[in-house]
Image 1 (cartoon, rainbow, N blue to C red):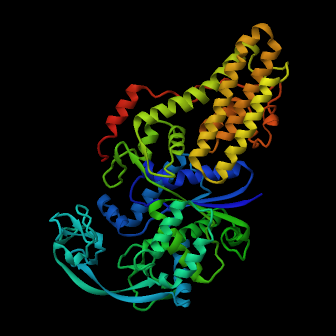
Image 2: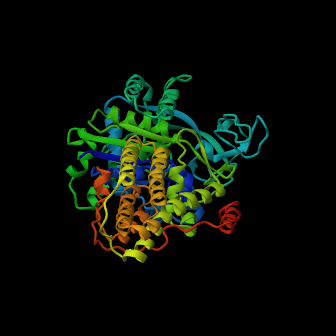
Image 3: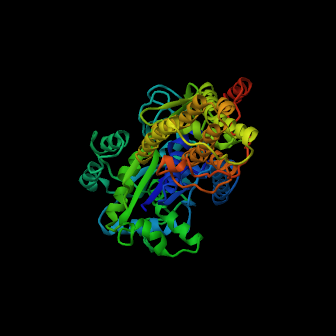
Length: 572
């Protein structure tokens, strides 16, 4: 039994995520976790909410709540939606947890001991009206290059010119609108990533099975221009992990917090301790997943994320772990994704454009979305959600192929043999041909799932469903029954066993429908099909079953048009 640690990029706390966020990390991570559990492996699947930083403070202010209360409320919302989408986390944690605070401070202390942190004096804009230093992106003004009057202090969105806040004409606070700004000197801590460039380069070179997307982004950051830069890991904010060296104060850093991108990946580790603490486990129970000196040396660690998160997970987080000098588990495989676009444009949380996770569940059950998103995962390039394609995929794959098969065979059996697996007859050449094809396809499916090729896995699973339909069409038990009821019984027996087999193979993609198929077949047998022949004899003659309700309803043209109109604008 293998031991597999899986983390999904942690979603930011400020609002409900859209479908593009979902397919970029959490959903494919869940697919892989469910598959590995189905194969009998020991899995630890962790995720959390990313709760620190200025956007959380601003979202809380907009909601009229203290930031801690806002984060607690949004955590509950995100946890509920994740559960309803069938995301099977072993623990869904919070980066604001006490466990993460202690661990972040611990890592900072270790990095300082190793000489990998330096103190830097820099000039930063201070807003007297807001009583705080402002991050560059929270300063607005007129662009000196193109005259756009909502340019941000780091970049003009209109002409894309990189800017410094002092370049802006008539700068103002994006928080209060105040122009009472001044430049003040402040001190910050920097992680000396540049000192670890060669070590990181060699480590990335050793990952020969990583997706090209992952390694190309990492190499670009390592070698382009001036190469890997040192990175600020503190901020002048109230909300966050207070800056400390372990449990000791850090002179000169009073009132500062660690930068959200320093503490957020550390939450992957802290989340395991949260899991242990929440479930009456010991430190040894979580350390066996994360400490190579305490049992994690035989763990395979896989991360899932969108391509925008790759630099932090291939460089900054590994620099933190390697730089600590402690025996923490490093990632073995990093699966990254391109972007999912929406109906001719982009999904946008800030603009409310596209379908958001809560809205999706209001109109259709999770499995409809899970299937479409996974079967169209943006792996080799960006992909696009269109309502026409969504309707076509649901209707053809889920309703016509899988749902129709389950409905036809169960209803036919009930009408001719009753609600029990019929006895009689033997499998002949046609059945052996199907068993050979299923054996070949199941092995291919396993290979694609093991290598995390999401779209190829979906294509192979659909082909397995199609093989059953084609068998049913050619065997035609409704015709056979008239001439040879015994042979028809064997054909139906195979068809009913296919339903159980489909339930097991499909569970990672469509867990709810899988559970309904198993329930209809009156079985708890979720054993993985090492042998297609044995799998098609799992339900013996005489085994009772029930005809299930329709597994998947077709999407009508009227529904599609209604949803297309409804989700064309902006969400409130």
